[in-house]
Amino acid sequence: MMKNSVKILAPVILLILMAFITPKAKLMVSSSAFVQNGMIPAKYSCQGAEVSPPLTISNIPASTKSLAIIVHDPDAPHPGGVYHWVAWNLPADGNITENFKGGNQGLNSDHKTGYKGMCPGEGTHHYNFKVYALDIMLQLDTAITDNQALLTAMQGHIIAQGELTGLFSKGK
Image 1 (cartoon, rainbow, N blue to C red):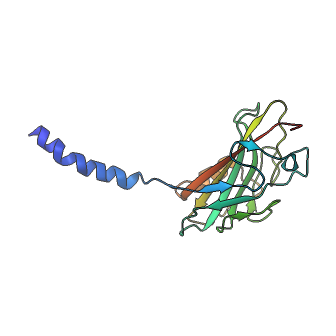
Image 2: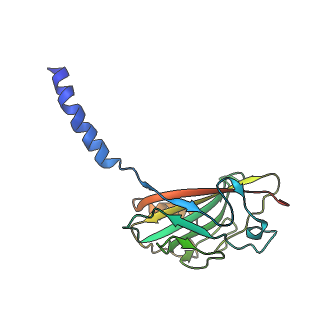
Image 3: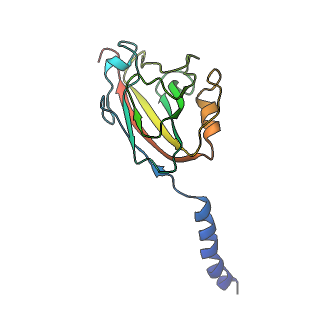
């Protein structure tokens, strides 16, 4: 009797779990300035113009209302790394131009709004450009929203995400 119950309930439990564990779509994130795991030009760093690089996001779900981005250097010698860019309510067309100032710009690790160029002390660091497709426009205060506040606000609203990683070393 117990084995029959398990055989009957197992598919039902699996269907219930699948309803709650829906895989998110994968955004494709690219840049005309650098390739995946390639070197980021100095132009986008503290050694250059310190402007954000151009990004192209594709495979955006039709239900996307806005995009958000978090740029993180996990190799920085600070607890949790360094956050170089926190932005949301970016256009859902996937075209983030160089030196992008649109959407809402939050606080980077220097507690300043907008993009902060790469500036590692030593060695080659990884810079993760994480992009999120959201089903809403977020209502957040740019003066106080950092990476953690953005991540919290996005919970339950991410319908797709993708990432592009670039490398940077001073003098390269």
